[in-house]
Image (cartoon, rainbow, N blue to C red; front, side, top):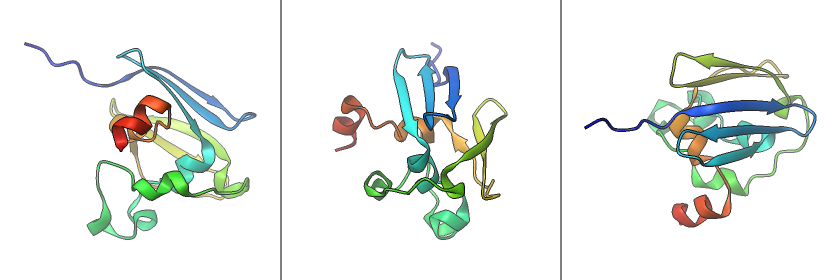
Length: 117
């Protein structure tokens, strides 16, 4: 029996509206605002050290409101193997890999909020 692995079918970076859109292979659609992506940066520095690393974002990132700035503007997004993306931010920050699991956990739609609770 083969287990279906979570993966995106389509990724769209909308720099004007400042959203990352992902259509998943399980028919779910995710829309993540750039400020949330940056607040949830998965790199060791942003997470406060390697001991704080986990496959899920900290729950407090959904409460943070980062203002529009170079820190929350995306220059480019690159695929990393078949498991995630790397983001180059306009302030030069480019560390951390946003895995598919991590990006899905950042979905803030009503269904995902309920499942997170």
